[in-house]
Image (tube, rainbow, N blue to C red):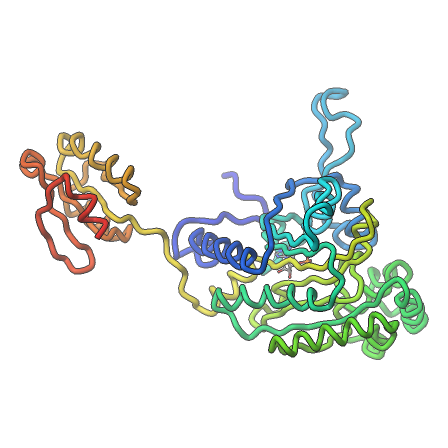
Length: 430
Ligand code: AMP
């Protein structure tokens, strides 16, 4: 049997599938669209794959994503045929780089500024699958291009919390840090390197490499988390330049005004190279080791790095599977599948033939209507309609049809009454 690839999931119809219930996904998608619009964000849908170089430059050569986790494809047909010599393509491992590319390429800086964008959909990383960590997963991504003010950092932190609340999720922890900017970070990075170098041989292999390339990443290493040299390492918030310090203080002031408790966690550095100043993660205790529901930060240099005009940016990506998993574990009730307004139960093939135009008329009137196609007994049809959650069942026997009526049963109360076929739409609608 051919099975779904490792680290991917089918999203299925039915509450028994828990967080994989498609009704829950539709509900989450409807809520995130609603809240994005409420906060003034508009949708941009970038392609699922991009030039590999975009992620190499935009996410950063030294990141785990680019080093180990990209699904890269060579667009090659027959040897020397279509695609030969074309640059390689990569399934998006995250959204920000693609959205920045789209912003630059389509001249979106000509739109009223700032440009506030959201999108959602699948992203792909060749990770070792485990709980909450998949190879295909979905993110809701929110970005603001063209605003440097700390109030915007606060807004993007708050919009995620607002969504989680609407979905019924509390107990969130906001971890915050500032990793400085090109003015103050080089000196801090050097200080960190000097502190860690004498211990290099005690660190994991990855950290030994990170130490020279990107020493901040050593701070969020899971393997070495308890190493005394890491615990005692200098922290970025104590080495910020004046402007970064002010920005960080303002952000915390805005969060307090919004009533969002947070803690400064100097270990939050984020895996992506493009961040400047604000970095944050929002955690939920029930997720355990993979506890970040979402994370993001500010990237004031990225748009310029990818060929645009110098433009500040800030945003985040929320893991939709992780949000639905936490809700499932907290036994939050799902929204349930959409329910038919009426189910037509014809008694026999001839009755069904005559019932089909009635079905079409109900649907054309905008009602959710369905019919039995399997010539089942009335009892079996009633059972099926009950399981589907139909509000009404219209029983159509030959004798009733001949008289131009049906028996309409209210499935909640069990009441039955005779209704003329020409007033069926009206009867179901009320
Ligand atoms: P990142 O883009 O790495 O900052 O991730 C942002 C959020 O996306 C995380 O907090 C997770 O909720 C989610 N996420 C990232 N990678 C994965 C993955 N491999 N599987 C499931 N969710 C993920």
